[in-house]
Length: 436
Image (tube, rainbow, N blue to C red; front, side):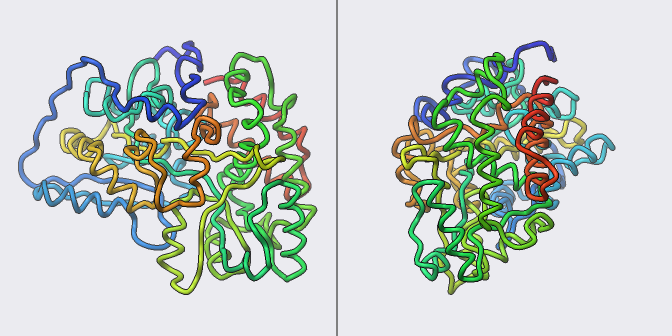
């Protein structure tokens, strides 16, 4: 592939920056391209599907596998899980070693270590451009998140809004309503501390979780003021260091100083997040909204919901939601015909809807029709005004995973006092300028 092709051509457009808004415009995408025929395999066939492990409940892909098996009894799909915060690196290691699964979870763009684009450029992912069903599965506004040099390599599964998973029982116990500004959040942190709890729990040893936390804050600080900030960064009209991203990191320091995070946050693991909020030790953790379904199913006597961390002003609050969860095919897989058949099965709208329901996420169908997700009534203000209130997940638009890695490790440094916001932003700019 031509790496000189600009990032803007690859992944950046006004529609993409408006996020799910333009999803309602069109769900078509393949034009008149002819599909490469899927070669049927005879006899029993086993293929493998790798996904991140799920906290609580069963892996939602199991239901998809069962539905596929019902129509294709000669095919066995073996599900392989890896720890959620290690999945990307696990796939890279296995792809390099030549022992990766036939099909595996990826994310849109190229901004983290499980994004599809750099894997495609390394020749690890099977191209889907000529598969019309795959092209048709890409919403019009998400094309720039999924096409690399006009070639397609992955199919989106659903949308996972980035939110706070909130123990509403703890909030009620503390006498707290949903905060409408960041200043109110700081005051709520002090209230929680005085009651022997903390408002938030973060996984200080997980750069991915800390990166999500920082992006959620950035939604209401950076992108509320300038929805096209990433387009300007790509054109070198701004930098992380000379923008409101500094306010984002300063806010994290303020949260730390106000006691917003749990004791020992810097050394906490990802596996500690959900038990802490489920047991009522903290009020909220930062994660995709779909995970609230697992909390509700596992803690029958609890009360849980999702919320959005506010902006500096109430009207600045923004939700991050992009069709970023996807599947891709291993180019070195030995059963491509069967694997393509499974991916085509996923691409059918009814099966995407069923997967999203099992996953607790938002289906592509709901997104393209502008439907407010019934499972997330608290997010109604955002989905009812997507052009104003929803933004694309920022790291999907960044040119390499080093930028996001630097954000995550930088926030770790902020929690331990070993880094300053200026140092973190300088490193992010250096990584960004490396390009793809």
